[in-house]
Length: 143
Image 1 (spheres, helix red, strand yellow):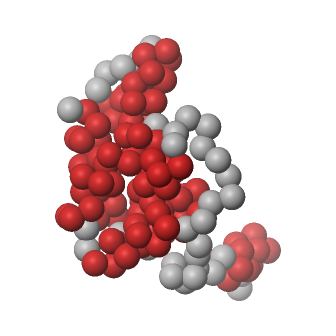
Image 2: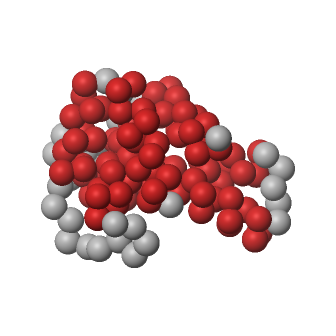
């Protein structure tokens, strides 16, 4: 017999459906990817031994700014699978209704495409591939 808490937990699990990733627009994927990449960058910075808040923040900006993300995706584009390349192109070519604060429109589109790729890999549960892409990204910016 299930307790009330177990039944409530089971109901919550039912209501959380697995999204069809091909149906999610690239803006939503980029929204997720932004958070996932930011966390990976913060973890990288702390593992490097940087603990002063101002230093951590300045270092993180180098990794997450639009120009860095655009450079990353342009550098690794040929290393991506056909499916990943198609997603990046779809995200890059999407019409955006917002303006970037600190980047030109082309750079912003490439950066958003990078974030969409990260979001897709995360939501698809492709953890090994996600780890490989993020490690490569950190390597590129860290040079």
